[in-house]
Image 1 (cartoon, rainbow, N blue to C red):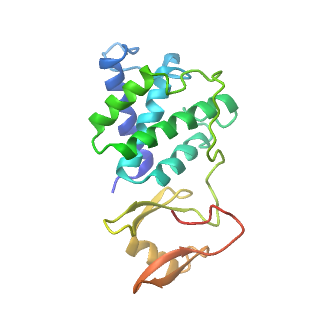
Image 2 (image 1 turned 60 degrees about the horizontal axis):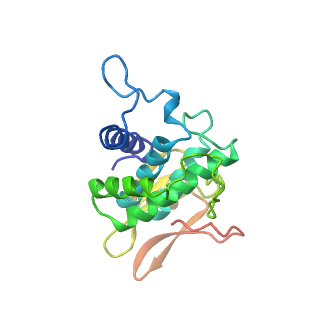
Length: 215
């Protein structure tokens, strides 16, 4: 299982390679590799394309819910290169572009098709490429980290049953069996195991938060 933070780096590299070859040339290091630390990578078209593509890939590989959670989590990592939690308009831009990526991620299976669809979305002005754009993202904008409920389901099996889970505080992944063991051992008091359709299933304990479900 690819852990999402590492998986993000892989998807980002793919977005830069495609952008450099098919949209416009990106700044290079002396050895010819793409210089991802250059100022030209922020609050512009390449920034928009990267966010959309990474979110789209997460949607393809995991789920729309997981892509949303990890997209928001990325904005609140702290001193992260791409964090924008202290800049409302840059945050709005990133979350908007993440949502466009999720939309096309749901419509596609392969990454090549996703890249081409997002290239068209960029050309058509569907992505936000400047934080001063007045379009506003209407979805969830908060930090998804919750110490009492840190688990998000990131993948379902063919029957729609959650099979992979991720602790967004510890940055640790679990299979269904592993997460059930963790709950039974008391490691996650915010969750319980219930029999659903004859199978042990992890369930979030009820609380006052509307977002207390696992995924």
